[in-house]
Amino acid sequence: MRWIRRLAKLVMAGIAGLALLVLLIWVEHKRATTLPEPAGPYAVGRVSYEWVNAAESDPLAPAAGAKREVVAWIWYPAKVTASSQPAEYMPAAWRAALSKYVGPVMGMLTRDMAKVHAHSFADAEVLGAQQVYPVVLMRAGLGALSTDYTTLAEDLASHGYVVVGFDAPYRTVTVVFSDGRVVTRRPEDNLETLSSEAAEKLAERLLVLWCDDAKFVTDQLERLNQGEGDGRFRGRLDLERLGMFGHSFGGAQAAEFCQEDARCKAGIDIDGRPFGKVIEEGLKRPFLFLMSDHHGEEKDPESQRILEQIQAIYNSLPTKEGAMVTIGGTNHFSFTDQILLKNQMVIGTARFFGVGGKTDGRRGLRITTAYVNAFFDRYLKGAPEGEWKKLQTEYPEATVEIR
Image 1 (cartoon, rainbow, N blue to C red):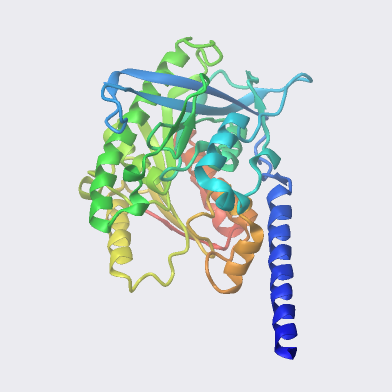
Image 2 (image 1 turned 90 degrees about the vertical axis):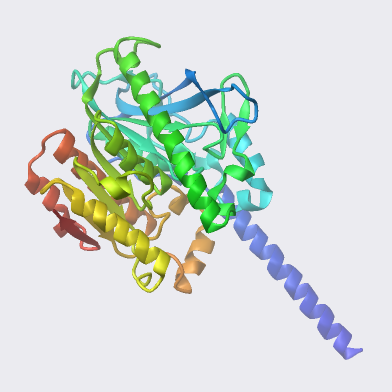
């Protein structure tokens, strides 16, 4: 009977250990988190718009003839008053839809979005410090939400940019409209669930749609600048100084958009594999490849092929108008808010076993925002080249190559 008592003790210990783990995960899930504070001199406002592209049907929609739609999130230099209200990191309806999409288990491994605090003010007036502000389009990674990049958007806006992120039905994992509609991405449109050959074909198809979305959003910004909508941005958008950056598949879109659309004056691909015509034709305008630490991938044939494609595009850039920056100790998700919002016990355990980047999440985001700002300052605002080069001393984690 002694072995039964020992077994019972082991079972009870296991149950107690599991209960403790669940409790710790729950505490971590409910812990409040404040995103890194923007480093620029301006307060930041955020507003959103819903736009329908009446001229184009959405081929990803299950219903034939459904028009393309986007939800645009705009961060901008703001005039803040005593009555200004902080913007929610993610609106309640979006939180509910995302929670339903990811399910309770995966949801527990991420912070409660209601407990995440950003630094934007909802629907604030555009600051009058400048008559017009340069505009930067921002595209999230495959399926990700624009709000996942709030740290980057707020920081860039605080330095005097209007930053426009946008989510589209059937591209983004879930999109919530003001009329209550919730549209989720279909499984067959998720690259991550397909074989490599099928995924590559779908990626090329999706890239065309994503770039068309970027062109449509740019058209809508021209309308906002003419005073349409609520009039907030009438005459305030300098679309002659338009840039774009994106992460992961959004980075591929930034490269392709800047290759196709002459309105793009400078772009950044943040750790994104390229697709489309840009691989063969290259780029002829200022462009930055901002990369995570891919050390150790040299022996993987697929990784080597992707790095060679990036190098070829980089080599096509005009002299003194291209750069490649690799941030040591980072991983693919070090460029998004998710590096701070995922369960830190899981992240810490992964780092202990040598999985994922070793650079602190906030430090990685600080380096990222610094380089994003410096690059756009150089090529959209005409800042001196020396300002761009100062970062190499300030952030020794980064390896920098400048054409």
